[in-house]
Image (cartoon, rainbow, N blue to C red):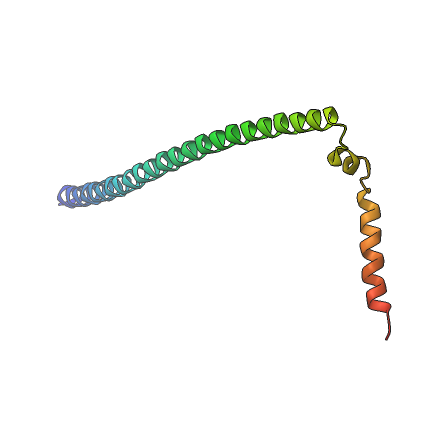
Length: 119
């Protein structure tokens, strides 16, 4: 009789192990599916990033072309004005730049005077 009981216990344990194994297999399948979905999302995001990088490169290239064209036009204007004996306003403005700290002091002084001014 002991052998019969031991066989029953053994069979119960085997069934529980089989059931646990099946549950684990199901969980692994669910995880695999979610991993696949995440991989697809990552690939989509990478494709979007690549497209945005390409757009940025094109915009940067266009911007550089515009800057180069602007520089060429500025040089032509400067040369033309020098040939005509005109004063280049850009140069006179560049020479008369006020340091940032002086500008800040100026605006601080104005705002302070405005606050302390009594009528």
